[in-house]
Each structure stands twice: as structure tokens, then as C-alpha cells.
Amino acid sequence: MIVGAGFAGMWAAQALARAPVEITVIDRRNYHLFQPLLYQVATAALSPGDIAWPIRRMLRRQRNTRVLLAEVTGVDVERRAVSLGEQSIPYDYLILATGVRHDYFGHDDWEASAPGLKELDDATRIRRRILLAFERAECGSDPSAQRRLLTFVIVGGGPTGVELAGAIAELARRALAADFRHIDPKSARILLCEAGERVLPAFPETLSRYAGRALARLGVEVKLKSPVTDCGPWGVTVGTERVEAATVLWAAGVAASPVARWLGIEADRLGRLPVAPDLSVPGLPEVFVAGDVALVSDATGRPLPGVAPAAKQAGAYVARVIAARVAGRPAPPPFRYRDFGNLATIGRRAAVIDFAWLRIKGGIAWWIWGIAHIYFLIGMRNRLIVSLQWLWAYLTFDRGARLITGRECEDRSPADS
Image (cartoon, rainbow, N blue to C red; front, top):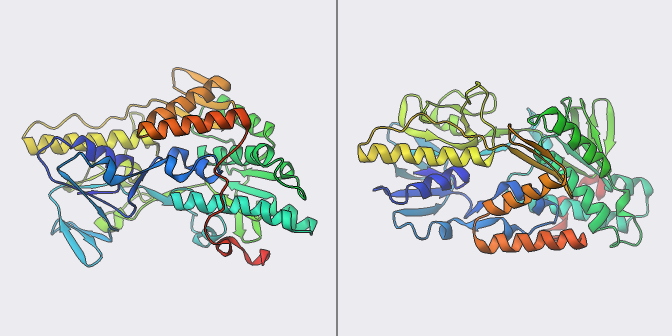
């Protein structure tokens, strides 16, 4: 039983394709999502179908696998069964790869005003908010209301926050620059608020400083050592400063899904479950946890980053452990993460790469970042479409996915009414 069809879950399922086992994959969505490019859907660079694929299609050749579109509500470890509401499905081995959700550090009421970016629905909702802000500013006549509508605040200076800030700045200053008559999209104010001392704190300091300078060249105001202390439909409070903004986006923190509660096991403050060297749950050798929801440390004792390569490697490793047990073979050595480096893009011809043994920044890093992401997309069709869209955007500064979908009232705050 595999709960979650993200990177860890899908790589585990595919690695068990030839094993003498029956696999059930359960997810509440019918698609696998390439999350590293989710921000590009949110900023109108790509369409949702460019970075998501039906789970059933990905696993259609695996005769030992079935897919269930359902939401898991609990796990009965004594009966070895997964609960889907009133339905219960037994398992011999269970892989929990349910990923993470947004963490508002005890201020869950902020979510309505500052959506995060973890799913396709989040991306299309954020795209709608961003594009509607420009449309409403064009329709308005009050300068103060227009300034508020054209102010965008991103909370969190990690890779997601940096990529969102850079993409919104390029959208306003390039793609939308000639589309409006009453307002000047280039006058949009983009603020990136980071509570720490630098953006991209997981990167070396030299690359963080470069990223800060690249954001400044795009017109992004970077506020360091500036935690957000309040948030609402009106905007945010950064320290003691009140910032009126119609669009606030959350990229400051994540917390694990409720697997710890399902299993009745104490987790860390982010909800991650401590696991054994083979990624099984201590005391429950038939239950494995993989991906962002697992608390796994590297050789230096630091928790592994919540990135796609770590999740893929964990999922494939768990599959090897289960296959060895079923076949009666010795277990593989303890899980060890192979770090292939960190990548982040800031904007056009600006990116940073940390390979530990090699650090790259600027245009070369930007090209490497693009090639790597295209390579890891699933399916030749998507690789070709994304490549052509990026090439067209590079040549023309155009973004072809500037569609406002959904109901406008979903993103109208009381201050806009």
C-alpha cells in the first residue's frame, strides 16, 4: 500500500514493477505533480497540464498495480489496514509518502489572506490573484487603492519565495508592460520578506548575496531580518511597518501531513516522523515513511532537505527493502542520500547552483537549471512543450498562460468590495 503519489510514492511504485507483489497507490488527486515548476504555473509561464500527469497513465504498464482516487483518513496499525472514510483496506507493507502542507507557525487564520504554493489548485488560485490585481487596478481611479493592488508581498526567502518574487517582477515589467492603458504594470511593488539574515539560507553565502543582487536588479525589494507579525486582507505587518497589499503569498514554512497522528507516534515540531536506517517506523517494521514527511539525517546529522531528489531516492530505496524482504534476500545497506546539489532561479539569465564541489551563478547556471528541469519532466511531450514555451518566452518576453479562471469573487477581499 502506497499512500501519496508524489515523488517518493511514484518512485517506490515504479521500482516495485517487477517484484512479486500487489501494489495499491492511493492519492486524493488523480495526477502526479512536478512541484519544482509549480511557481511557473502561478506566474502564468506554464499551463497546469505542462507539469502534471495522470497517475493511471504513468502506471498503466504495471500489471501488479492499481490506483485508487481517495483520501486516507487514518491507519490501524494493529489490524494493518488503511482507512478511507468508512472503507478499510488491509496491507502487508505500507509506504506513507504524503508530503507536506503550509505551516503558518500557529497563525492558520492567515492562510485565507496569504495562500501557499503546494498544489495545482494553489498555483491557479495564485495566478488568478496576481492577474486580477492588475485588472482591478486598471478599472480603478483611486491612486491609493491602485498602489495597494499593485503591491505584492512574498513571505519567505527560500527557493520558492525567491523564484516567485523574480517571476512576478518579470511578469509585471516585461510580459504585462504593454497590455494596459490606464496603469503602468512596471510600477508594481514586489516585496520579499525574510526573517533570516539572507535569502536562500540553504545555499552558500556568496550565492545568497548574488541572488539578493539579482532580485534588486529586477526591482524586488528584499527585506531581511523582517518577520511578518500580522497578516490580513489589507496586507501585512513587517516588524512594525504596515504594508498595504492586495496580494500576499506564503513561502515561509511547511509542516508534514498528519501521518504521526495516524500512527500515534510523536513527531518533531514540523510533524516529521523519525525513522530507522531502513526508513521504517521504529516498532512498526512493516510501515515505511518516505519523502518530506520523514525525518532523516545526513552524515553530518542535519535533516535532509525537502527536495525532489531526496524523495525519489527514498522511495526507490524503500522499494528495494520491500523487494528484498519478499524475496528472502538480505536487506540493502542503510539509506544514504546522494546530494546532487541545490538549484534555484531568480529570473531571466540569473540562477544559482551549488554542487558542493562547484558553485555556479548567472547565465550559465540559468541554462543548466532549465536543462535539468526539462530532463526531469515526465514524458517527451511535456519536455518538448515546456522547451518551446521557454524558448518563446525567452525570445519575446511573452507568457501565454495568462488566463484568469475560476470565480472572481473567490479572490475578492472585503477591502476590494
